[in-house]
Structure formats: structure tokens, C-alpha cells
Length: 452
Ligand SMILES: NC(=O)c1ccc[n+]([C@@H]2O[C@H](COP(=O)([O-])OP(=O)(O)OC[C@H]3O[C@@H](n4cnc5c(N)ncnc54)[C@H](O)[C@@H]3O)[C@@H](O)[C@H]2O)c1
Image (cartoon, rainbow, N blue to C red; front, top):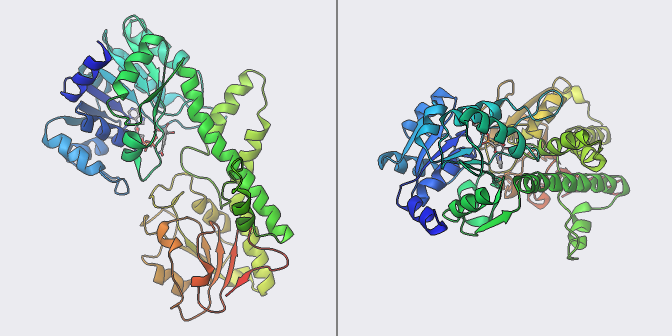
């Protein structure tokens, strides 16, 4: 089929896409293809999730357009969800793999989800089918692991009988659909030129910014891991510089802003830590493969460990503050603002906020948290409202950069507040008189804390 024929087939509903893994990324991908005109089968091993999807119930309230898109697809008879991965493979033309890619105990990719899903796809694979891997994987996974399983299970040959490509998903949680459709070009690398061309033609139907075609799958896999590692290393640098500023009495935020006015400088922001299922995991996808070649990626490893230690650093700031104020930890109640790993999302996976709460558990008079996006987390006391937390806590620690926290005006509160801002998001001028505010990289030895 030519590119034009492929695109016509998608828009007229002649192509069926099976999306394997209906999670935070898979559901928005399914909706993007529905909006492009395709028929979509959502495949997941989670039975209740599948049943909810078939009833139009989507648990992604922080993602605009998603529930609406699934409901429209159901109404038009273009979408259904299933747990039967083999049947879905038999009934579809294109199969997209977007299952979780997590680490095993040796901090290498746990391949079980990928292998399971690829075997099921292989068992239903037909001549002319297209398989696209979109979950983040260590470089070389598609050309070796995925290709081998598909060829064995399907008894077919890649490039001759079916197409196989890697195309990273680049979404930012909270704006997934917009990212897929509008914000970035789609990167595509096939295991051969035919695979690259057919997958690129497919994605021209969805990505308004077009497609970047790469030579092979391995360059596309590397591009995604590099994006994550770049962020991790740069955040670690910002954290290290901010710690230096804390010791030397320099305001990091002011110094950073001046440094970044030079076009070659892009200093990131320091913070309580890096969470979610992406950035903290991807560096290991690189270091583990590097080890196979006898390479020790020291910068990447050091950055990971610097960022992993940041909840401990915020505890260190908190303890320093208690010392200066002459307060005893055992008599102080800590209120944590935010539980999710990043602002304006409900995702708490590998959240540094939760890591921090675990770290301080038992050392203070009590810990409670409030998050406008997260109602409850097992094992953590939560407040229903911010006022409830303010009334209970002696010291507040900001752990998540929700937009609503950035605009917080607390000048009406009767008593002074003591705040350790692990995200540098609060505006100290909007705190009650006499309040004490400490941010990361803003606590100098000369001016230990801001006093309004
Ligand atoms: N969350 C993000 O912001 C983001 C951004 C870009 C890329 N990614 C990558 O996308 C991938 C998926 O991430 P996610 O956040 O959507 O994960 P998720 O945990 O939200 O969803 C994954 C879904 O896959 C299902 N699943 C697990 N094993 C399965 C199997 N064998 N067969 C069928 N379904 C299976 C799970 O039940 C779950 O519903 C990961 O590789 C991640 O690194 C995530």
C-alpha cells in the first residue's frame, strides 16, 4: 500500500489497531487512533479495567479528552476492550505494545510483560500486519527480543511478511492526547526500511508535527532513553548546585535565572526528588546495556543516586531548621503538601513525596498529607482539605509542584507558618506575617531563611 492508501484506510475506518496495555499511555494512544478514524481494540490483562472501559468508565480524570474519546468510540461501535490478546492480534492489522517496562532486582528490564504480550501478538500474527513497540525499552530490545519472539510464534519473517518498528511515546502526563496529536513529531525506527516507511505513513495520520524517520529501531529506542537521561542528569546538576548555594549563602533561583539568559545554559530546577515510572527507570536501561559492553556510565549513575538522595536532603534542611528554631522533632507535627510525583497529576508511582513521608515516619510527632489530586494512599494519613492540614501541622513541607500551590495566598491564616518548600513553588510574600520559609537552594548560611 502507498502512504496515501494507508492514510485513506485509517481515516475511513478500514484499519483496526490493537493497543496492548490500556494504562496512562495506552488509553490516550487508543483515543488518538479513534480520532484519526481507525477502529481500536484495547487489550489489557486487568479484567476490571477492561470491563470499565467497555462501560465507558476511564480512570484518567487528569487527562483531558480521554473519557470522552473512549465513550464516543463505544457509541460509534469503533472501540472495544478485551483481555484476549491472541484474538485481538488475529482481528487487527496494527498492534501497538505499550505495557509497563519496569526493573527487576538487578536493575535490568523485567522482560516478563513484554515477552507475554509479544507472544500473544505472535500467535495471532498474519502476513501484512504491523507491530509497533511504543513502551520505553533498553536500546536493541526491538531488533533482538521482540523480533525473535514474533518470528518464532508467528512463523513469519519480518520485512518480508510483517513490519516491525519502534516508536517512542513522548507524552507528558496531564496533556497526553495533545502531546500525541500536536506537540511533538513522532519518532519512528523500523527493523528495516519497509517497516520504517509503513509505520511512518501510519503516524502521519495522527502526529500533526509529522514523523522523524530513523535508520533503525535502535536509534529510536536510544532517542527516548536519552531524553529521560538528559533530564535526570540535568536535574541532578541543579540539585548539586542548589546544595552548594545552600551552604555558600547564594540564592540558586536568582543565579540560575541570570545564567540561563545565556543561550547555551539550560539549568534545570532542584527539588525533593524525581518520580514517576519514567525518569527514575530509564537511566538503568542504559547502564544495564552498557555493562554488557564493559562500559561504566558514571555520570548517569551518579545523577541517579544524587536525585534518589533528595528526600534525605529535604529532611536535612528540615532538621537544620528545627535546630535553629530550637524545636524538638518528637514534638513537631509535619504536614506534607502533595503526594503525586509531579504537579497537576494524580500519579503517585515512585513519588518522592511518599519516599519523604516514609523517611520521616516515626521521627516526628506525626505526619499527614494533603493533595488536591490524590484522595488516599495506603499507610498515609491524609487530610481532605488544605485548611484541615494547616490547622493540624506545625511545619509544612511542600513535596509536589501543583499549580494550585503556586498560587497559594495564605496571608489570611492567623498564625505564622513554617515551611520547607521542596519544590520552590510557594510565593513567600503570600505567607502570613512572621512566617519562615526555606526553599532548596535558597537557604543561605548568612540569611538562613526568608522572613516576611
Ligand atoms: N506514564 C508516562 O508518562 C509515560 C510517558 C512516556 C512513556 N511511557 C512508557 O509507556 C509504558 C507504559 O506506561 P504506563 O504509564 O501507561 O503504564 P501503566 O501501568 O499505566 O499501564 C500499563 C497497562 O498495561 C497492562 N499490562 C501489563 N502487562 C500486560 C500484558 N502482559 N498484556 C496486556 N496488558 C498488560 C497493565 O494492566 C496496565 O493497565 C512504559 O514503558 C512507560 O515507560 C510512560
